[in-house]
Amino acid sequence: MDELNSSGVPNEDIFITFATGTHRRHTREEQQQIVGEEVSEKVTLYDHVCNDRNNLKYVGTTSRGTRVELNRQVLEADRIILTGTIVYHYFAGFGGGRKSILPGIASSEAIQSNHRLVLNPGKGRNPLARTGILNGNPVHEDMVEAASMVTPDFLCNVVLNDDGELSGIFAGHWKNAHEKGCRFVDEHYRIKVNEKADLVVVSCGGHPMDVNFAQSHKAMDNASFILRDGGVMILLAECGEGYPSPEYRKWLKYRCKEEIEEVLRERFSIPGHTIYSAMEKAERFHIILVTELNPDDVHRLGLTPASSIEEALGIARAELGGAPSAYVMPRGYTTLGTVPTQKLHTTKCSL
Image (cartoon, rainbow, N blue to C red; front, side):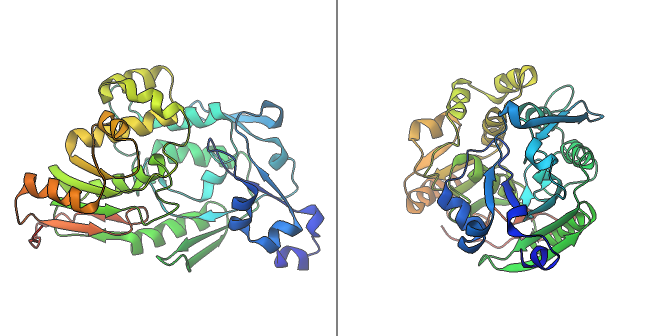
């Protein structure tokens, strides 16, 4: 803000649009928490609404068939500056950068079309549409193509440490600066372990990373890469807001991921894909969820509910015995476990 003011841009000519994608609108208090009370009093704040047809404008169609409609108010601005944080994302590879455009300020239809690329043309999900991958990731590349139709003027993305403090600032060209930030995240937040373990205990890292199941699932995904098939995962995720929207519960009626995948190929849904991804992991691992979610909902996902870490450890102990190999991930939302090709040895722990 100070930099813009010193360049001759008055506060009345600046507005901030929150790139909410398909997520709910922020409250005024949440907006103030994000930008700070001082900034919130100086400039106008807007939330993007993905189904507000009057404020959407068509800008082109990507080579993968995504019809890109974006926030008209943003498009009509003289300059577009992207801001945000860079973290791992379970199918776009990384957050930040181009995601401020698609899905950030895109129409619901454009977002669904882009996210559908997580599925293979034939069956199952695309193996390149996953955490920490940009090259060859169809979801990411489609987002980049959409953002290039807008050509943002500047980007400033940050990476935060465990205490919420700045550990990296990446500014400049909207694509190049973002890619540099992704490399930084990979260098500092991809944790190499010796081999896959029998047990992974993972916490999302507290509020707001575990505010609902959709957010908490990202920690589940990050932890899955260091857990052997058939192993046990204990995920600590409060999920105080339950699900982001009522649509998530509609997908709980399906008995398996194959049924969900069949429906997703006909009409893709972000809530449906989240439930699909959770069920996919539930088939590979025994996942115990320490949460406030309704136990019946947890069972429908194929997961085991627990009311405390002590209860969860008891369940794991009964299944794995007294000394499984184990990892603990206190910041599962922001860190990614990975196993090197060479085979080393894990330590044993007592439950």
